[in-house]
Image (cartoon, rainbow, N blue to C red; front, side, top):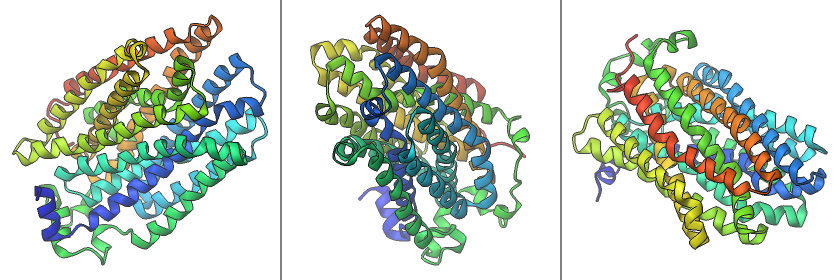
Length: 443
Protein backbone atom coordinates (compact mmCIF):
# COMPACT_ATOMS: atom_id res chain seq x y z
CA UNK A 1 0.00 0.00 0.00
CA UNK A 2 1.42 3.42 -0.98
CA UNK A 3 1.89 6.28 1.49
CA UNK A 4 -1.09 8.09 -0.05
CA UNK A 5 -3.29 4.98 0.21
CA UNK A 6 -2.36 4.61 3.88
CA UNK A 7 -3.27 8.25 4.55
CA UNK A 8 -6.59 7.92 2.76
CA UNK A 9 -7.43 4.69 4.60
CA UNK A 10 -6.68 6.28 7.94
CA UNK A 11 -8.30 9.69 7.63
CA UNK A 12 -10.77 9.49 4.72
CA UNK A 13 -10.74 10.54 1.08
CA UNK A 14 -13.61 12.96 0.50
CA UNK A 15 -11.13 15.53 -0.83
CA UNK A 16 -10.62 13.22 -3.83
CA UNK A 17 -14.36 13.40 -4.52
CA UNK A 18 -13.90 17.14 -4.84
CA UNK A 19 -10.90 16.56 -7.09
CA UNK A 20 -13.05 14.35 -9.32
CA UNK A 21 -15.62 17.15 -9.65
CA UNK A 22 -12.89 19.55 -10.76
CA UNK A 23 -11.63 16.88 -13.17
CA UNK A 24 -15.15 16.62 -14.63
CA UNK A 25 -15.42 20.41 -15.02
CA UNK A 26 -12.05 20.60 -16.77
CA UNK A 27 -13.09 17.77 -19.10
CA UNK A 28 -16.25 19.69 -20.03
CA UNK A 29 -14.21 22.87 -20.45
CA UNK A 30 -11.94 21.23 -23.01
CA UNK A 31 -14.76 19.39 -24.74
CA UNK A 32 -16.36 22.73 -25.51
CA UNK A 33 -13.21 24.46 -26.70
CA UNK A 34 -11.60 21.70 -28.81
CA UNK A 35 -14.69 20.76 -30.82
CA UNK A 36 -13.74 23.34 -33.44
CA UNK A 37 -10.51 21.59 -34.48
CA UNK A 38 -12.45 18.56 -35.71
CA UNK A 39 -15.30 20.53 -37.25
CA UNK A 40 -13.00 22.67 -39.38
CA UNK A 41 -13.82 20.83 -42.67
CA UNK A 42 -17.56 21.03 -41.89
CA UNK A 43 -17.33 24.77 -41.17
CA UNK A 44 -15.30 25.38 -44.34
CA UNK A 45 -18.01 23.69 -46.38
CA UNK A 46 -20.88 25.38 -44.53
CA UNK A 47 -19.33 28.86 -44.69
CA UNK A 48 -17.90 28.45 -48.24
CA UNK A 49 -14.22 28.93 -47.39
CA UNK A 50 -11.58 28.20 -50.03
CA UNK A 51 -8.27 26.59 -48.83
CA UNK A 52 -6.49 29.90 -48.16
CA UNK A 53 -9.59 31.41 -46.53
CA UNK A 54 -9.87 28.30 -44.38
CA UNK A 55 -6.37 28.84 -42.94
CA UNK A 56 -6.91 32.58 -42.48
CA UNK A 57 -10.42 32.38 -41.01
CA UNK A 58 -9.53 29.50 -38.71
CA UNK A 59 -6.51 31.44 -37.42
CA UNK A 60 -8.71 34.53 -36.89
CA UNK A 61 -11.35 32.52 -35.01
CA UNK A 62 -8.67 30.84 -32.91
CA UNK A 63 -7.07 34.22 -32.12
CA UNK A 64 -10.47 35.72 -31.19
CA UNK A 65 -10.98 32.89 -28.71
CA UNK A 66 -7.49 33.27 -27.22
CA UNK A 67 -7.82 37.05 -26.88
CA UNK A 68 -11.24 36.84 -25.26
CA UNK A 69 -9.97 34.03 -23.03
CA UNK A 70 -7.10 36.25 -21.93
CA UNK A 71 -9.42 39.20 -21.32
CA UNK A 72 -11.71 36.93 -19.31
CA UNK A 73 -8.91 36.43 -16.80
CA UNK A 74 -8.99 40.15 -16.02
CA UNK A 75 -12.24 39.41 -14.19
CA UNK A 76 -12.45 35.66 -13.56
CA UNK A 77 -9.90 35.27 -10.79
CA UNK A 78 -11.07 38.36 -8.94
CA UNK A 79 -14.74 37.38 -9.18
CA UNK A 80 -14.05 33.85 -7.95
CA UNK A 81 -11.99 35.13 -5.00
CA UNK A 82 -14.92 37.43 -4.19
CA UNK A 83 -17.81 34.96 -4.70
CA UNK A 84 -15.97 31.88 -3.46
CA UNK A 85 -15.41 28.61 -5.25
CA UNK A 86 -18.94 27.19 -4.92
CA UNK A 87 -20.83 30.05 -6.59
CA UNK A 88 -17.95 31.31 -8.75
CA UNK A 89 -17.22 27.93 -10.34
CA UNK A 90 -20.93 27.25 -10.93
CA UNK A 91 -21.46 30.65 -12.58
CA UNK A 92 -18.49 30.17 -14.92
CA UNK A 93 -19.60 26.67 -15.96
CA UNK A 94 -23.18 27.76 -16.58
CA UNK A 95 -22.07 30.65 -18.80
CA UNK A 96 -19.54 28.72 -20.88
CA UNK A 97 -22.07 25.91 -21.43
CA UNK A 98 -24.54 28.46 -22.78
CA UNK A 99 -21.79 29.93 -24.95
CA UNK A 100 -20.94 26.51 -26.39
CA UNK A 101 -24.55 25.89 -27.38
CA UNK A 102 -24.75 29.36 -28.98
CA UNK A 103 -22.22 28.26 -31.63
CA UNK A 104 -25.00 26.20 -33.20
CA UNK A 105 -26.94 29.40 -34.00
CA UNK A 106 -24.17 30.86 -36.20
CA UNK A 107 -24.92 31.11 -39.91
CA UNK A 108 -21.60 32.58 -40.99
CA UNK A 109 -18.02 33.39 -39.97
CA UNK A 110 -18.94 36.58 -38.08
CA UNK A 111 -21.64 35.00 -35.94
CA UNK A 112 -19.44 32.01 -35.20
CA UNK A 113 -16.62 34.33 -34.11
CA UNK A 114 -18.96 36.17 -31.71
CA UNK A 115 -19.95 32.85 -30.11
CA UNK A 116 -16.28 31.96 -29.85
CA UNK A 117 -15.53 35.23 -28.06
CA UNK A 118 -18.34 34.58 -25.56
CA UNK A 119 -16.94 31.09 -24.95
CA UNK A 120 -13.42 32.42 -24.40
CA UNK A 121 -14.48 35.01 -21.82
CA UNK A 122 -16.56 32.54 -19.81
CA UNK A 123 -14.15 29.57 -19.98
CA UNK A 124 -11.52 31.73 -18.29
CA UNK A 125 -13.21 30.89 -14.99
CA UNK A 126 -12.22 27.23 -14.93
CA UNK A 127 -8.58 27.26 -13.91
CA UNK A 128 -8.73 30.06 -11.29
CA UNK A 129 -11.64 28.20 -9.67
CA UNK A 130 -9.91 24.82 -9.98
CA UNK A 131 -6.64 26.05 -8.43
CA UNK A 132 -8.51 27.81 -5.62
CA UNK A 133 -10.49 24.62 -4.94
CA UNK A 134 -7.26 22.60 -4.81
CA UNK A 135 -5.65 25.08 -2.43
CA UNK A 136 -8.68 24.88 -0.13
CA UNK A 137 -8.97 21.09 -0.17
CA UNK A 138 -5.39 19.76 -0.22
CA UNK A 139 -2.19 20.27 1.79
CA UNK A 140 0.83 21.44 -0.21
CA UNK A 141 2.41 18.01 -0.61
CA UNK A 142 -0.73 16.68 -2.36
CA UNK A 143 -1.61 19.73 -4.46
CA UNK A 144 0.54 18.91 -7.49
CA UNK A 145 -0.97 15.42 -7.66
CA UNK A 146 -4.50 16.79 -7.30
CA UNK A 147 -3.72 19.40 -9.95
CA UNK A 148 -2.25 16.75 -12.24
CA UNK A 149 -5.38 14.63 -11.87
CA UNK A 150 -7.89 17.40 -12.54
CA UNK A 151 -5.68 18.86 -15.30
CA UNK A 152 -5.74 15.49 -17.06
CA UNK A 153 -9.40 16.28 -17.66
CA UNK A 154 -8.21 18.65 -20.38
CA UNK A 155 -6.78 15.64 -22.20
CA UNK A 156 -9.82 13.45 -21.60
CA UNK A 157 -12.05 16.19 -22.99
CA UNK A 158 -9.82 16.55 -26.02
CA UNK A 159 -9.69 12.73 -26.47
CA UNK A 160 -13.47 12.41 -26.50
CA UNK A 161 -13.79 14.99 -29.28
CA UNK A 162 -12.17 13.04 -32.17
CA UNK A 163 -13.92 9.87 -31.02
CA UNK A 164 -17.40 11.42 -31.12
CA UNK A 165 -17.65 14.85 -32.74
CA UNK A 166 -16.97 13.98 -36.43
CA UNK A 167 -19.51 11.17 -36.17
CA UNK A 168 -22.11 13.50 -34.62
CA UNK A 169 -21.46 16.15 -37.27
CA UNK A 170 -21.74 13.62 -40.10
CA UNK A 171 -24.95 12.10 -38.78
CA UNK A 172 -26.80 15.16 -37.46
CA UNK A 173 -24.89 18.27 -38.61
CA UNK A 174 -22.06 20.25 -37.02
CA UNK A 175 -24.51 22.30 -34.93
CA UNK A 176 -25.46 19.29 -32.83
CA UNK A 177 -21.83 18.73 -31.85
CA UNK A 178 -21.91 22.10 -30.05
CA UNK A 179 -25.37 21.53 -28.55
CA UNK A 180 -24.55 18.14 -27.06
CA UNK A 181 -21.11 19.02 -25.70
CA UNK A 182 -22.44 22.26 -24.23
CA UNK A 183 -25.32 20.47 -22.49
CA UNK A 184 -22.94 18.29 -20.46
CA UNK A 185 -22.02 21.33 -18.37
CA UNK A 186 -25.52 21.40 -16.89
CA UNK A 187 -25.08 17.82 -15.64
CA UNK A 188 -21.93 18.95 -13.81
CA UNK A 189 -23.79 21.84 -12.20
CA UNK A 190 -26.23 19.45 -10.53
CA UNK A 191 -23.40 17.33 -9.10
CA UNK A 192 -21.48 20.41 -7.97
CA UNK A 193 -24.35 21.75 -5.84
CA UNK A 194 -24.99 18.30 -4.37
CA UNK A 195 -21.41 17.49 -3.32
CA UNK A 196 -19.42 20.74 -2.94
CA UNK A 197 -18.88 22.95 0.07
CA UNK A 198 -15.70 24.44 1.55
CA UNK A 199 -13.97 22.04 4.00
CA UNK A 200 -14.96 23.91 7.16
CA UNK A 201 -18.65 23.68 6.21
CA UNK A 202 -18.70 20.21 4.59
CA UNK A 203 -20.66 17.85 6.88
CA UNK A 204 -19.45 14.80 4.90
CA UNK A 205 -15.84 15.54 5.92
CA UNK A 206 -14.40 13.87 9.02
CA UNK A 207 -12.30 15.72 11.60
CA UNK A 208 -9.19 13.71 10.78
CA UNK A 209 -9.34 14.58 7.08
CA UNK A 210 -10.05 18.23 7.85
CA UNK A 211 -6.96 18.31 10.07
CA UNK A 212 -4.94 16.70 7.26
CA UNK A 213 -6.16 19.33 4.76
CA UNK A 214 -5.08 22.06 7.19
CA UNK A 215 -1.79 20.36 8.12
CA UNK A 216 0.49 22.97 6.55
CA UNK A 217 2.15 25.15 9.18
CA UNK A 218 0.51 28.38 8.01
CA UNK A 219 -2.94 26.73 8.17
CA UNK A 220 -2.49 25.84 11.82
CA UNK A 221 -2.64 29.47 12.88
CA UNK A 222 -6.05 29.96 14.43
CA UNK A 223 -8.28 32.15 12.38
CA UNK A 224 -5.79 32.67 9.55
CA UNK A 225 -8.43 31.96 6.90
CA UNK A 226 -10.30 35.00 8.18
CA UNK A 227 -7.22 37.13 8.69
CA UNK A 228 -5.71 36.55 5.23
CA UNK A 229 -5.66 39.87 3.35
CA UNK A 230 -7.31 40.10 -0.06
CA UNK A 231 -4.56 41.54 -2.24
CA UNK A 232 -5.35 43.85 -5.15
CA UNK A 233 -3.93 43.28 -8.62
CA UNK A 234 -1.73 46.35 -8.20
CA UNK A 235 -0.26 44.83 -5.04
CA UNK A 236 0.09 41.34 -6.54
CA UNK A 237 2.01 42.78 -9.51
CA UNK A 238 4.70 44.09 -7.16
CA UNK A 239 5.76 40.53 -6.24
CA UNK A 240 8.45 38.67 -8.15
CA UNK A 241 6.45 35.50 -7.47
CA UNK A 242 3.56 36.85 -9.56
CA UNK A 243 5.85 37.65 -12.49
CA UNK A 244 7.56 34.26 -12.30
CA UNK A 245 4.22 32.50 -12.67
CA UNK A 246 2.94 34.94 -15.31
CA UNK A 247 6.05 34.74 -17.52
CA UNK A 248 6.21 30.97 -17.16
CA UNK A 249 2.64 30.79 -18.45
CA UNK A 250 3.33 33.36 -21.18
CA UNK A 251 6.11 31.22 -22.64
CA UNK A 252 4.49 27.77 -22.36
CA UNK A 253 0.70 28.12 -22.62
CA UNK A 254 0.87 29.00 -26.35
CA UNK A 255 2.51 25.65 -27.04
CA UNK A 256 -0.48 23.78 -25.62
CA UNK A 257 -2.81 25.95 -27.70
CA UNK A 258 -0.80 24.94 -30.75
CA UNK A 259 -1.19 21.24 -29.97
CA UNK A 260 -4.91 21.52 -29.30
CA UNK A 261 -5.93 23.66 -32.27
CA UNK A 262 -3.40 22.65 -34.96
CA UNK A 263 -2.61 18.95 -34.36
CA UNK A 264 -5.57 17.73 -36.45
CA UNK A 265 -4.50 19.98 -39.34
CA UNK A 266 -0.88 18.82 -39.09
CA UNK A 267 -1.93 15.17 -39.28
CA UNK A 268 -4.29 15.82 -42.18
CA UNK A 269 -1.74 17.69 -44.27
CA UNK A 270 1.42 15.80 -43.33
CA UNK A 271 -0.05 12.31 -43.69
CA UNK A 272 -3.17 12.96 -45.85
CA UNK A 273 -5.63 11.65 -43.25
CA UNK A 274 -9.39 12.09 -43.49
CA UNK A 275 -11.89 12.32 -40.62
CA UNK A 276 -12.08 8.55 -40.27
CA UNK A 277 -8.33 7.83 -40.28
CA UNK A 278 -7.58 10.92 -38.16
CA UNK A 279 -9.33 9.62 -35.01
CA UNK A 280 -6.62 7.53 -33.34
CA UNK A 281 -3.52 9.47 -34.51
CA UNK A 282 -5.03 12.57 -32.89
CA UNK A 283 -6.39 10.79 -29.80
CA UNK A 284 -3.27 8.83 -28.83
CA UNK A 285 -1.09 11.91 -28.06
CA UNK A 286 -3.84 13.10 -25.72
CA UNK A 287 -4.02 9.72 -23.99
CA UNK A 288 -0.26 9.88 -23.43
CA UNK A 289 -0.64 13.45 -22.17
CA UNK A 290 -3.18 12.31 -19.56
CA UNK A 291 -0.63 9.93 -18.08
CA UNK A 292 1.96 12.71 -18.07
CA UNK A 293 -0.37 14.99 -16.16
CA UNK A 294 -0.85 12.48 -13.34
CA UNK A 295 2.84 11.50 -13.25
CA UNK A 296 3.73 15.18 -13.22
CA UNK A 297 1.82 15.61 -9.96
CA UNK A 298 3.08 12.37 -8.42
CA UNK A 299 6.83 12.98 -8.87
CA UNK A 300 7.18 16.13 -6.69
CA UNK A 301 4.99 14.47 -4.02
CA UNK A 302 7.43 11.54 -4.08
CA UNK A 303 10.35 13.94 -3.64
CA UNK A 304 8.58 15.73 -0.76
CA UNK A 305 7.84 12.41 0.96
CA UNK A 306 11.59 11.75 0.72
CA UNK A 307 12.15 14.92 2.78
CA UNK A 308 12.96 17.28 -0.08
CA UNK A 309 12.00 20.92 0.42
CA UNK A 310 8.82 21.80 -1.47
CA UNK A 311 10.54 24.34 -3.75
CA UNK A 312 13.36 21.91 -4.60
CA UNK A 313 10.90 19.12 -5.43
CA UNK A 314 8.82 21.49 -7.58
CA UNK A 315 11.72 23.03 -9.52
CA UNK A 316 13.54 19.75 -10.08
CA UNK A 317 10.38 18.19 -11.46
CA UNK A 318 9.73 21.16 -13.74
CA UNK A 319 13.29 21.02 -15.09
CA UNK A 320 12.86 17.33 -15.92
CA UNK A 321 9.61 18.07 -17.76
CA UNK A 322 11.15 21.00 -19.66
CA UNK A 323 13.93 18.76 -20.94
CA UNK A 324 11.42 16.08 -21.96
CA UNK A 325 9.75 18.47 -24.43
CA UNK A 326 12.87 19.07 -26.52
CA UNK A 327 12.74 15.85 -28.63
CA UNK A 328 9.66 17.23 -30.40
CA UNK A 329 11.98 19.01 -32.83
CA UNK A 330 12.55 15.59 -34.43
CA UNK A 331 8.81 14.88 -34.94
CA UNK A 332 8.71 15.44 -38.69
CA UNK A 333 11.92 13.50 -39.34
CA UNK A 334 10.60 10.55 -37.34
CA UNK A 335 7.35 10.85 -39.25
CA UNK A 336 9.19 10.22 -42.52
CA UNK A 337 10.18 6.82 -41.09
CA UNK A 338 6.74 6.03 -39.68
CA UNK A 339 3.77 8.25 -38.87
CA UNK A 340 3.31 6.58 -35.47
CA UNK A 341 6.80 7.66 -34.39
CA UNK A 342 5.75 11.27 -34.95
CA UNK A 343 2.49 10.65 -33.10
CA UNK A 344 4.42 9.13 -30.19
CA UNK A 345 6.98 11.94 -29.87
CA UNK A 346 4.24 14.59 -30.04
CA UNK A 347 2.35 12.68 -27.35
CA UNK A 348 5.49 12.57 -25.19
CA UNK A 349 5.92 16.34 -25.54
CA UNK A 350 2.25 16.89 -24.68
CA UNK A 351 2.67 14.68 -21.61
CA UNK A 352 5.65 16.77 -20.54
CA UNK A 353 3.60 19.93 -20.98
CA UNK A 354 0.81 18.58 -18.80
CA UNK A 355 3.31 17.52 -16.14
CA UNK A 356 4.79 21.04 -16.31
CA UNK A 357 1.31 22.56 -16.11
CA UNK A 358 0.37 20.58 -12.99
CA UNK A 359 3.40 22.06 -11.24
CA UNK A 360 3.38 25.63 -12.50
CA UNK A 361 -0.23 25.96 -11.33
CA UNK A 362 0.76 24.54 -7.94
CA UNK A 363 3.49 27.17 -7.51
CA UNK A 364 0.66 29.69 -6.99
CA UNK A 365 -0.63 27.96 -3.86
CA UNK A 366 2.99 27.40 -2.78
CA UNK A 367 3.79 31.13 -2.92
CA UNK A 368 0.49 32.95 -2.17
CA UNK A 369 -2.22 32.90 0.53
CA UNK A 370 -5.40 31.00 -0.32
CA UNK A 371 -7.39 34.24 -0.48
CA UNK A 372 -5.37 35.32 -3.55
CA UNK A 373 -4.80 32.06 -5.45
CA UNK A 374 -7.62 32.63 -7.97
CA UNK A 375 -6.48 36.21 -8.62
CA UNK A 376 -2.86 35.18 -9.23
CA UNK A 377 -3.98 32.27 -11.39
CA UNK A 378 -6.05 34.76 -13.37
CA UNK A 379 -3.07 37.07 -13.86
CA UNK A 380 -0.81 34.25 -15.01
CA UNK A 381 -3.46 32.79 -17.28
CA UNK A 382 -4.04 36.23 -18.77
CA UNK A 383 -0.37 36.30 -19.73
CA UNK A 384 -0.65 32.76 -21.06
CA UNK A 385 -3.59 33.80 -23.23
CA UNK A 386 -1.74 36.88 -24.49
CA UNK A 387 1.21 34.66 -25.36
CA UNK A 388 -1.15 32.47 -27.38
CA UNK A 389 -2.56 35.52 -29.19
CA UNK A 390 0.93 36.79 -30.06
CA UNK A 391 2.03 33.39 -31.30
CA UNK A 392 -1.02 33.17 -33.56
CA UNK A 393 -0.72 36.76 -34.78
CA UNK A 394 3.04 36.97 -35.33
CA UNK A 395 3.91 33.36 -36.19
CA UNK A 396 1.04 31.06 -37.03
CA UNK A 397 -1.25 33.44 -38.94
CA UNK A 398 1.38 35.04 -41.16
CA UNK A 399 3.73 32.08 -41.41
CA UNK A 400 1.08 29.42 -41.98
CA UNK A 401 -0.74 31.47 -44.62
CA UNK A 402 2.55 32.21 -46.43
CA UNK A 403 3.66 28.57 -46.51
CA UNK A 404 0.14 27.42 -47.42
CA UNK A 405 0.20 29.72 -50.45
CA UNK A 406 3.53 28.30 -51.67
CA UNK A 407 2.49 24.71 -50.85
CA UNK A 408 5.18 24.21 -48.17
CA UNK A 409 3.06 24.00 -45.02
CA UNK A 410 5.42 21.33 -43.62
CA UNK A 411 8.09 24.04 -43.23
CA UNK A 412 5.75 26.10 -41.06
CA UNK A 413 5.19 23.10 -38.80
CA UNK A 414 8.94 22.46 -38.54
CA UNK A 415 9.48 26.05 -37.32
CA UNK A 416 6.68 25.62 -34.79
CA UNK A 417 8.22 22.42 -33.43
CA UNK A 418 11.52 24.28 -32.92
CA UNK A 419 9.64 26.92 -30.90
CA UNK A 420 7.94 24.17 -28.87
CA UNK A 421 11.28 22.57 -28.04
CA UNK A 422 12.82 25.78 -26.69
CA UNK A 423 9.87 27.26 -24.79
CA UNK A 424 9.96 25.28 -21.54
CA UNK A 425 13.66 25.52 -20.77
CA UNK A 426 13.40 29.26 -21.40
CA UNK A 427 10.45 29.48 -18.98
CA UNK A 428 12.25 27.41 -16.33
CA UNK A 429 15.28 29.72 -16.46
CA UNK A 430 13.11 32.83 -16.14
CA UNK A 431 11.30 31.40 -13.13
CA UNK A 432 14.55 30.21 -11.56
CA UNK A 433 16.15 33.65 -11.66
CA UNK A 434 13.02 35.42 -10.41
CA UNK A 435 12.19 33.05 -7.51
CA UNK A 436 15.13 30.72 -6.80
CA UNK A 437 13.48 29.23 -3.67
CA UNK A 438 9.83 30.04 -4.45
CA UNK A 439 9.37 31.78 -1.10
CA UNK A 440 5.85 32.60 0.06
CA UNK A 441 5.01 36.28 -0.32
CA UNK A 442 5.27 38.40 2.81
CA UNK A 443 2.28 40.68 3.32
